[in-house]
Image 1: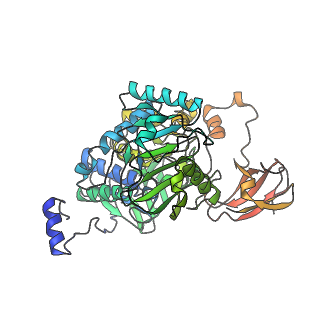
Image 2 (image 1 turned 30 degrees about the horizontal axis):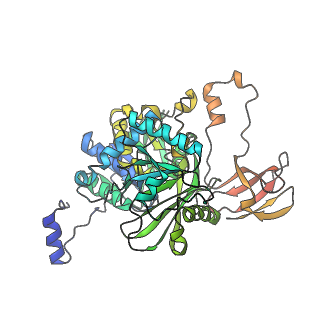
Image 3 (image 1 turned 180 degrees about the horizontal axis):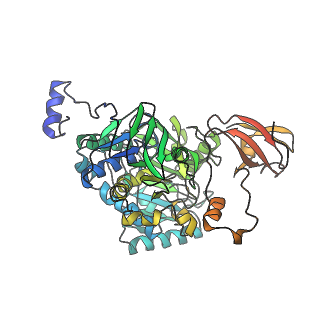
Length: 416
Length: 91
């Protein structure tokens, strides 16, 4: 088994050259588990971790069709914030934020969580009204939030263009000081390693191709590495949630879309915080490595291809340049897409299903990364007790039938 | 990015000229008052979200502004057929 990381282990391995243990052990699947988690992304791994750590269930397999840190967890723009409008959503994201604040110590893995602040810009009077409403809602919910003026933004971010001559002048913004970024693939590795240390089997290169259901109860899964039995199965497969649901004879209120992002060449520190704009549609931060990380919107058509149209990233690049003319000659290095599972109300589904023992955690759409620990935490409790965690209750699948949607389009917009 | 053949303009144009309009063949229930909440939810929110070839709707928003149907792969984006509403798509 792996050792705990510490100053001593770092020093020893650093001096001796090559004394690193494999961080995530490669294991063969057993024929039966207490719980199977389908999907080895951040949310799935966090679910397994909290099941093992807090719910006393350690006979768990996480089945990942690719490799750990190869899916959406490593395809997002790493932004973390909890300044959502609705009580239900902000409680869930704030739960995640509190877990983020202790996550590196908890996992014994530095996920480079950096609370560098998040600005959500407003460009019209209506934007500013919405921002004031959202900030007030946040403050009432005990979440740090403030409205800042264009002048204050300019003082904090000298390179931003607050000129009145812009096509959509910046009028102000909301600011969440505790927001920030984290190293996204590090989050997947950290949760995977911590879960493995608690006895969870992390099985990579293992695609689920069928779900066995008998008399309304889930029995196990068929995979590319053989059949695996379990009485409880949690599906956390983001863009492929509908595909898994179909295997169990279910439908979901979800459409899969490509979401694109791109990064520039690395450069010296120039942007110390996170800037997002729903109105002109772009969001940007600078990674610790030095590259500018820029997120675009989704393509409107449904797709399972991890790529999108160039006009979508062109649109975001144009928006970023209007806000930061200084970046006009920055060369872009890489561009990619991930498949996101978009729900009609821009809120996730954390829910049991009509099939007993089968649970879904999906529909995070364009903004799931920020919720990773919170999502895993409430989903673990939901699976362990066969009863939704109190914070997950509003996110039941039933809301699409009862009409109790949680409309977060206002707070989330495009830059979710 | 891909090209779409508009069955009304009868021209192959860039996808950018068109807007997607969701899955095809989702019929509005004839008597909304008479069906269950589950059936209504299925009509309004639930989708097949098929991986592979499926029929979907597009509108030529920067062209003739007419709606039509496209059979497209959601994996490769390859388009097999386009058809106007009411056209015979069996074959």
